[in-house]
Image 1 (tube, one colour):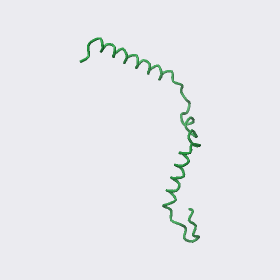
Image 2 (cartoon, helix red, strand yellow):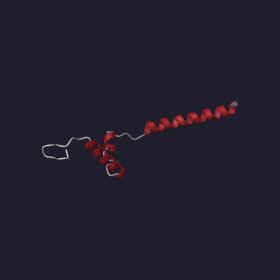
Image 3 (cartoon, one colour):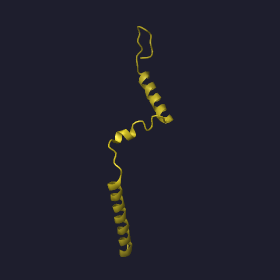
Image 4 (tube, one colour):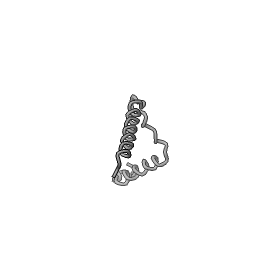
Length: 74
C-alpha cells in the first residue's frame, strides 16, 4: 500500500498536470472557423485520392446501364 509521502507526491504531480492542462486550454489559439483549417488538408494525399477512386468504383458498380444507348457510364 502507498505510504503518506508517496501519496502526497502523486497528488502534487496530479495537481500540476491538471494546472498545466487548464493553462493549455485557456491559452490555446482559437480559430474563427475550424472547418476552414480542415478543408483541403488531405486533398492531395495519395491515400485520400485512392479512397475517392475506390468509393467511386463502388458506386458505379451498382449502376444499371442505360439500355437505350448501351452507355455503361452513368
